[in-house]
Length: 350
Image: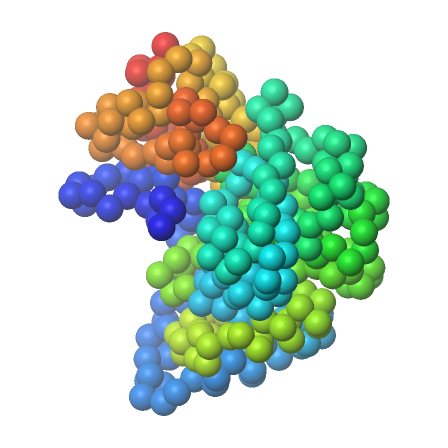
């Protein structure tokens, strides 16, 4: 299994920058809604969360047949690869990116899995011309694009993505992972998908922005044909009663949503500017709640060992395709926590 999910060591007070969760935590009212929801744990939830799906569809202003819920966004990655394109279907992944796309594809028999590398020399920004040429030559069934991307933080506007899609075979599926879109100033591709009626799937995580990784709930918006295929392979009761309650609860707190976005824009920029002043470090601009960094000498593993001794943990990136051992990723956390990391890096990285 791939390496993610945070620090699991013996230091219970470790300041963990390896996980990308809203530093403001969960919406304050969610706790009380979950406590109230415990009264219903003696009954089964709806098999597929139909009532929740209808309310979510209304909130997102999309047809119900364009939606599916999952046991976290990652569940929907595996569900898609299990239900669509089985039997030697080719796929393309734009790397470096989240490792679970490849694992899910390989596990479910997709072949070949083509990796298109977006390089550090371009600040990990896609050059569309060679990419489109490769897509039109290789003819993948699906192109996987994380937007904003994990771990680089690079994000693209719907118009930029539409420009690439229109130059490719209209039968190609575009799997666009928008797990970090709520932290970004870029717009979602939702309107573009609905207007163009494209064979697309937009993945949304509720873990990151709403600070609830332990509840395991996410959703996908896709062309009805894709949703139907996924529903055919979905296990019953994939989403538990408390997770279903959270879907309704978190969107009600508009103040929390606005404050989270405002905080992230300001603090992300402040952290970026501070890291940019460290001579032995290259930091990349980000549209998510984290920054990708690269040491000009040494390895991130050795750096993390030194940071662990100071009670700080980072995400080393040697397991991401296309990244060298000097790369690491750090979350944007509360100001005082960020200052502690910045001070440690300023001392240790020369």
